[in-house]
Amino acid sequence: MLKERTLTITPDALDSMITDYHWMVNAIKEMRAEMVIGAKTAQYGIEATLPKAAGGVGDPIMQEAIRRSKNIKRVAEYEKKLLEVQKLLDNVSGDREVQVLNWMLDGKSQRWIGQHMALSATSIKRIKDNIVKQMMA
Image (cartoon, rainbow, N blue to C red; front, side, top):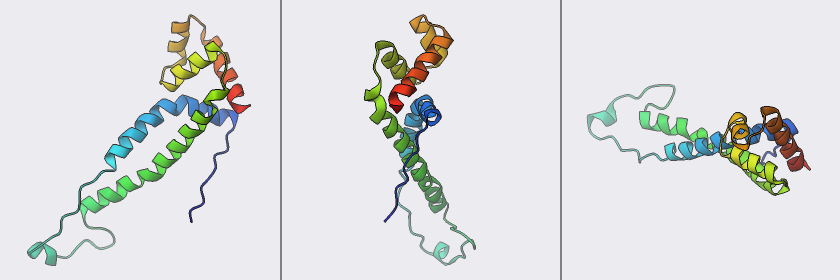
């Protein structure tokens, strides 16, 4: 039985997960699409009798499958982080905080958010810090 690792969430780690949320969603989408590989074809005739490369898998399709299967662990880690953020979303209150959080999860920069809310970068940083505090509570 595999033992599932639990995430230790610190304010800095949560801040990073919020900042990285959007690209992790996109990365999961792309990596899942890459994991689909066609079936391996059997070799017949003279090709079946030829020697294979020593010291590893000689089939390039199998090598590609192995390379892509390593992404499964990465996808699982990203999903775990996304779920942690999603579980803590309801802790955030306040119209400004909710709006800033939603835009951050959509991948908007703090500068962009500040421009669209007519707030300074310092104000957005302060709101983000408040969001992290609320989510940690």
